[in-house]
Length: 108
Image (cartoon, rainbow, N blue to C red; front, side, top):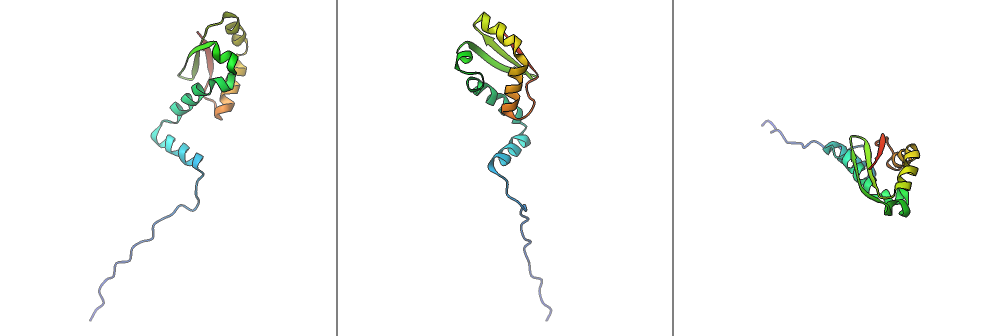
């Protein structure tokens, strides 16, 4: 009597390495295309940590549009000082995020 075919399940393919949680979350954000928005929110939420309490207390609205950071400043002397240090502000923010996101800063 011939032997009947026996079903042999295939082994599930495992990835050879495990990812750290940070890398897994970043790849998830990239797959859903929300990584840029997440970076924008991180910049806005960490504004006080990056610039300090004094500057943060004299700023109003902060938003990012097309790689430009828009900051509303209530103090005219502070606005003048910050205009002279635009490149330093851009470097601080981009170093905090780890990639070049902000290209320009506009003070309102």
